[in-house]
Length: 356
Ligand code: IPM
Ligand code: MG
Image (cartoon, rainbow, N blue to C red):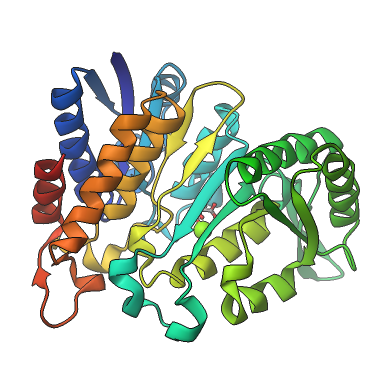
């Protein structure tokens, strides 16, 4: 197959980690007889520096016309004080919105080789962590009306959290379908004891639960979810939640696995076009040092093959390559322990590519 991939390397460690994913994708292309064509588009701070905006219109078009988009990370302290309307993160939100990427899948899996990297006790994670967070990505407070005004001599800022039934239903369906393909359990996370948007969320989820009778469904409040993820994380299979709750809970869940550097994500639309990115940020403190962990990005590339290109065997090959590298003792500094082989970002990319 011939596929066009738009690369959004971004800022900080973004270029380093995306380059490793490209190495691995090229190894896959060679082995399975595919052609992957790459188009690079600047996003985030690097684009602000060059063009004064975090993504150009032409850049956005190159995302829309691609078969899939692979992203590194955006942002950094250098751009913290730019006007909010052109912040690096704005570009990321704009791409999500313009490409209709409403469903963000964040699988959280503890690699058995890294069981002792989890900050939680063996008695808690020993059974193995394998859960999937399905985060709504184009609605809620991230995209609600916002304003800062002066009222009674002081500034007042407002961000609205809005959800309509169709937005809840479509993400709910993605989550129920994901549960059917996994452990057939779905926990819907909300704050229905306080928020109207959560009460609507819950009502729509209950309607869907009647349809998906093979899925064991439960409601759970977001604060309790934060606690249960630490107390008893193995109770979860699929978790579905709104945009901001999902942002927060997915960072928390990633820590169950020891390193946020291992965690991939897929942002899906109603068609084949998707964007794939590690869930971590641009890590400006280690940018350019060749010590970042590229596995989250490489695993995101595997999700790209699986979800956008329907290449299951190729995706399996990438996951097997990661498992083999860990079995063989290769570790980037974030997951390194005495007795293992410490490698940098680029060397890990070479190992993974060679394992394909
Ligand atoms: C994420 C990130 C983004 C988000 C930021 C960079 C805007 O934290 O993908 O989780 O909040 O969605
Ligand atoms: Mg986040």
